[in-house]
Image 1 (cartoon, rainbow, N blue to C red):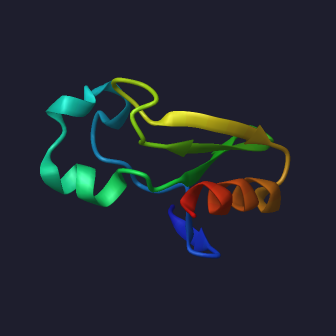
Image 2 (image 1 turned 45 degrees about the vertical axis):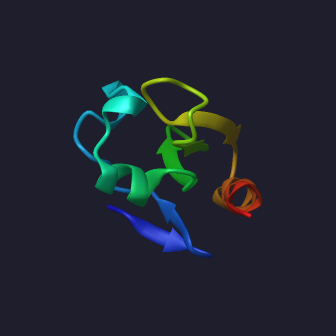
Length: 81
């Protein structure tokens, strides 16, 4: 279930095959919605910040792993600027 904290999406519902689609094959709508938009995903007991920014050819780039949601949101906000 997706929610937001400080305008950062937490556990967003990503498009189908989001992490298996070459960036040059993404739809214009997907690029417009997700390019350079950092988000946070829950992973076990921690959080990962990711962003579709071309750092990987077919998936969102991992920007860091964090123990708390607040730390993850802080990193995502830094990337968003």
